[in-house]
Length: 394
Image (cartoon, rainbow, N blue to C red; front, top):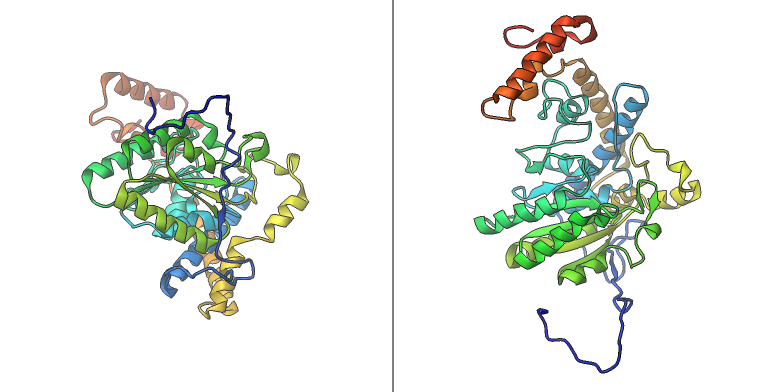
């Protein structure tokens, strides 16, 4: 059975979906000027500058922390470089009460919501002030206060979780939604399809935002799927969909704002495909020179989303070259000084290894923890002093 009445034909008629051509929504040209028929979103100076500063903060943080990883001060890092408009522009269109379920390249959304450089550093170095108590890899942020669900490494698991969380929001009736971010590579996981189908059937207020940045690690989009990107898949679930220039922060803001209205006011899930490019390596463990050319990267650097927004701000006389210089200097200084402080903080005490897992540690876990302490007592020189610091001693 289908949900609609199908037309009947009397000879084989096949379709491959080629008749569906999804346009790309765009407002801002690379020179910072609007397209002729485009309209400026309802965005005041204060919010526009907040968006821009979050984008620049993300770029500076990424540059500095990748350098720190190369120096051996950090074990791992992932950059958002080139995708700042897709992340920050969409996050700015949400309400503070909306839940964000990220993949691992959405630090800009946290920066926009007010996550401090100190909080970023505590997580990256896994020190005693890290909300995750040092249990996660670097770049796996989370903030209960800012409604940013803690990131988990397995690819695409956050997508069906977003559908479930949004179903709860629908039942609560507080006018909130969930947005979940993922790359086009994650859209090839089964979790993606299960999530979209459940969201469409149960009509939940969720926004699926696919960052189509060209590569799933080293696999180019052309080798991932034969169809026209990820957006057409929404038709299979009778879901609203829009494709956006992911380097156009104004278009991302406006598209997400419209998607949020559909989600919250009409319980209609929405798929947004943001067309962008991952200018950085997949991670600090990746070397993109093995699978793409310098000419390709250079062509996309000409489409830098931060420069595009900066030119727009300058055209409105909301930002100047002096503002840029001062902000960059201050931010670089803050990142460097905060990193030094975070590095000096002690790791989480050993006892935090099993806290927040159970209300009361079950016998098996308690027994394992005692064996761990005994092992450290036996080989104290093999462990840092912080590992020996537990209640009652090791």
